[in-house]
Length: 219
Image 1 (tube, rainbow, N blue to C red):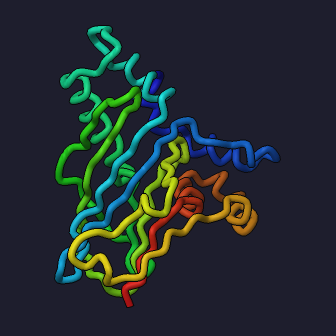
Image 2 (cartoon, rainbow, N blue to C red):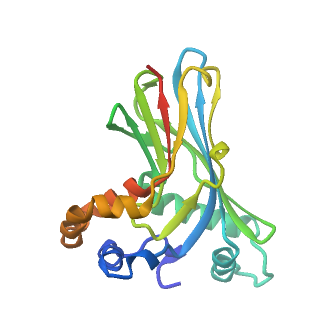
């Protein structure tokens, strides 16, 4: 791979592909099945956001080729540790693909431990938990999305049950999984996308609009 693990592609290139007449055919290059659990405490706080990503076999095979130093077609503990170190550092600038908002305002998160990596049944797995930088009470409206802001990797929550609330206050809020329609989002935001083509700082806006998210109404 020309860029380790191929985690990100130029945001400008991604927007250029979306702006072409064949935009509907634009697609990510890395795919993973994802699961999110929002852990809560009995006193009504968000304590952890737990994530599991299982990557597609094609990408997983390419990772083996890159990191299998002893050429045994496996990833041993040392090789997995190197992948863990690399992805933990690489994804930090993207907040580990986690976006949390409370009443429409972004809430910061932190990663207390390195991203754990495993290789099972021909697929690469990553699992980790992030915690809120500041206390998040189960009040108002909370939204959590898990997405690559460059849209190079697609994290797919196949079933609504893959985005869950757990713990002591799991029943405190109404839970809704929102799956935006890409054609509608692009049509509704065509003007801003044209501007974003020239301003790569807007690269995360479209991916945020397109991302599947878990919304909690805790009013």
